[in-house]
Image (tube, rainbow, N blue to C red; front, side, top):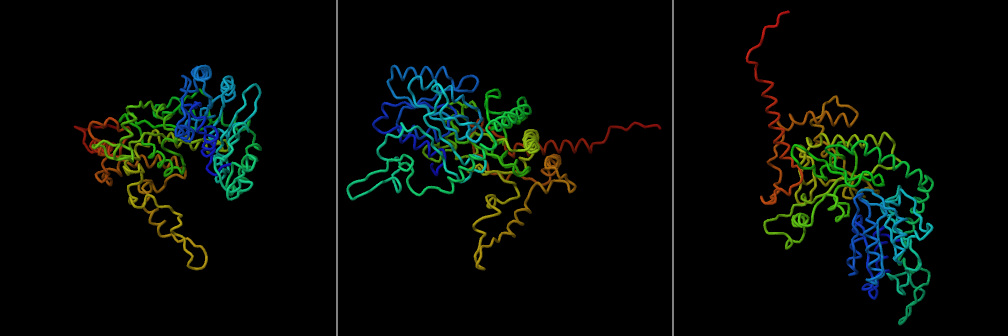
Length: 507
């Protein structure tokens, strides 16, 4: 077990499998799905890395894989390591681990599986029959139900542990140390887990696996499949919700999507969607690239040339940016991601899907009530001062020990922050207890509120050079406010303009 999660398990496997003397004789295959933690460690060793593309179904191209396996086995004469994800943490698309394992073993390769995304939901069988066994498995136990603060887990065949010196030397790895000699313990687990172990975390890891087994993998997978079907029944053909990845491939209940605004031919920024789902509905999701950059570029259909331009906008290296390009973190492409958990009730699932659909249809209206920070890409309501948008209701800074006990003193700050809540300024006093209905009411009131109260001239400019304007992929508040003001003025004119004449109405 490792305190760093599944990523540390990958690092350990890299250190074990790619000692300096064997790197020149080793080739590593990775899939398009891979998390950065299963890409970068291999690349940094200097070993040859081959990226296996997907087929038209969005799965590992097994024909391409077999071709490369055959080449490096027969002609390249290199030892083959395949390190693949059992499921993508971006799309939830699953790989047929047994079939791919068999294929790799036909060419005497080692097959490592990253189960970080899949482990909480599927059966993990290290030793299925007929060469489908797994040489190593990485598990991020903190992703399980009840898993926070648990260590990552590496399960691996003993044949991988041929290194005489532990990959991480330290206390607990040695049998005896003299001034001139060191003898390491023979027990693999003790030798490779230096330092004080995370005892409580390890116990908790056992409990979360026990919970998973108690629920039953079949029960979990059946529920996951039903949730996937329910999601795609709602959004497969939705004109404004672009779901990443195949809708027909086997997948977990993990969904990444973009929301399109047709009349502006751009998308809502993923960070704005994330904030709005929280502010309106209390739903927490994740936005960004989810640590799988190359795969995300594939899914968004962004070529290398375009990716290089976006990189110049967001790089922290000033020498890597062109002189005319400011640092604009907002320009980084991404998506919004959430999962539907197998233990969620049907009512909770419906609430989440209804919220996503509301944002897809009416979320653009709320852009007028928010502004952004171009350097951090953080969005906040306009009435919350920029210095307070990182404020937390509960913070170590609010704790005192003046009375001999730990006390929290943040009441006044909470009141000040709650008084700046934008939605309350435009919602009806008789609003519904249903957040969806309340959001609809707010959306109807936004145009008038914006016309009378909002001035977008205080928004920070993007400062994107004219020749790169077409690379602005997201809708800005300014775009929406201008539209709302024009539309509202036209509507008022139509209401106030008298008829050219009024016919007499006889009873």
